[in-house]
Image 1 (cartoon, one colour):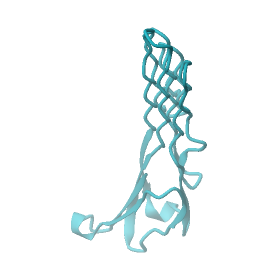
Image 2: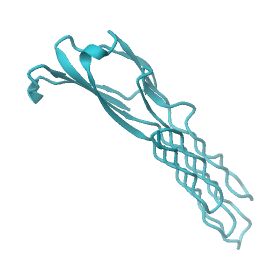
Image 3: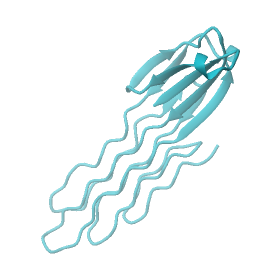
Length: 165
């Protein structure tokens, strides 16, 4: 999701224009002509959860790990520094692991791309959760960091978080 706030020269909250982009796909943002600053808040897509294990009767198995959260980016620009239009890209979240019968679960996936505000700001995706295991817990997906995508969880270990800038 992307939230863009244009603050006019007088800086009064009553005159703010807020644009919210939440539908997957590409959209165009046009800064308000009277805006002095533009605040961009991006939230990256989350990773998909892993499917639960489905082992033979009488054998312990675990549910799949949850997908990691997408990263958050919050940047304020002088509106005069922005181009006349900016492409905002919202990806879909990662897919969950496929269901299984008589086996350990499948991992979830990270989203196929990141949330972007042109080439100016990026919020990275979270990693997918690990699939459910036999008699073991499953790791969750890694959360996105400021400089990278979170990794997919494996068995009882969670996925590594994205690295910083």
